[in-house]
Image 1 (tube, rainbow, N blue to C red):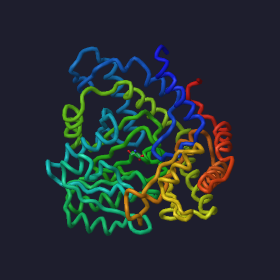
Image 2: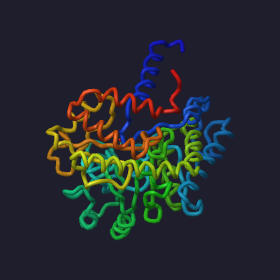
Image 3: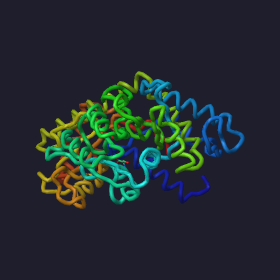
Length: 406
Ligand code: DSN
């Protein structure tokens, strides 16, 4: 590479990824083939519009690639093209959710999603997000144990009469009852949007219940448990799909990122292989093993454990706050983010750490290694010596094989 300055940063980042334990619940490591497609000349082309209806010529292969990504996405989630349509153009999860509201909620209409501090997402109507500014937002939370109280959600829905109810979370360690959300939405005449960005790989592999029978629209990013490129897709019931398509383009976006669309097609192919199903169920087994090991070390976990890929660790028992804990972990090469816990009083001083197992599972780690990871977390938080060396050794035993050689 001629640009030596940039090359140094990229090489250093590849090294960092290889030598650290990535426990960010929303991150993963894509295959070498996906990296190759992302770096392909498909990035050179403009394709505003949809297959067969483009605003520029020269799009024959992009039409075929986009249709392939759509076909595979529907098949992966067991959906009939007679009932569902999928838009694969959203640049990422936030614009995907924004497009859904733009399509289905009138200006000034009402959105009801979960509070960010309880495990929701900015785009589920947080006041600092455009979704909480352009629409009226009413939010639900979790109970003191960290669980969703569906009766409470129902009460709020009856009171606020939202146009759309959002289910699906970024920091909820338990199974989501999409059926209940669907019933609540129906009872108040609202659409039900399930944002399954975090659990899409688990849903596709049937290790988490599917939202599709109970939702009108389902959004997901492709780069979390689904282990694809950064980007998002929107599934909508056929009768809503032209509204959604128009909201994505020309409503919100310009040309799709064709190299990403192609990489999505490949990710859906990879996720439909039997090994992926094994991978997804190992993510959950690993999260459970990590949760048990942490509990044995004396930690409290929000909701007492996990059913999916993530854990909310309470660090107050060690007289730490989330920010201090995050820094202590980072110092030894354990990458995990601070997170609010249900009984936190200030969102600016969270007491928890969110831990996720998708990336470590991609590296081939299993239940046995999760015990070691728990011990490393405990050691890092209690200032034990040699933790950094132990982290490095574990990383060397389970290399991130898809990273380019440097
Ligand atoms: N930033 C993602 C997460 O970490 O959950 C959500 O967009």
